[in-house]
Length: 237
Image (cartoon, rainbow, N blue to C red; front, side, top):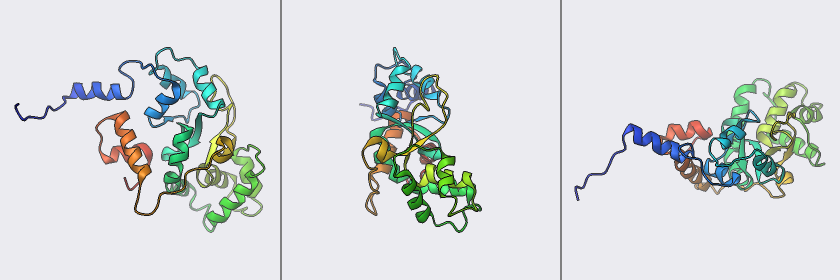
């Protein structure tokens, strides 16, 4: 044996990365398995995941994604970088608590002045009380329901903080279904999925962070820590 470790050239690395992304050859995978493999899919534009999965899966048909949203195996939610992502129900319940601090900071980065003086714990409690009736609401409707107590910030800042950060929410169908135009309406993940979000990990541990690192490397190949942070928006990885 020569003792030398083979080093991938640029072309081989490119091919390996495409293969990990399921973009070199279409895969024979169920839709939820493909979404899990990718660590979720960007879904800010509601029709985008259909194109992404058609590019990756053999014999993909749009109802195979729409049906997984309506049967609640897949969820649209604010997660990585505070953008809307399509993720599996299991992943969002396991990962959401790890994203809490990042989501709050992202919203504050945009609305810090408007939210000055607002106790976020009190705002979250008020929002949860409003949503406890089980009725889906838009961001604006949720914000107006609590605006009597916090009139200064305005509905946009209140709605973004509540629906994108303080309360783990699912964006409900028909938003995100194939060739369907619908506004974003929300329910708490625990109500929509019938299971609570996993609690934060004990101090000094980070099993979700480790899982995200492995999931990212599996789907994207060799990467620097800066690449991983740019993907998910999380610090401390």
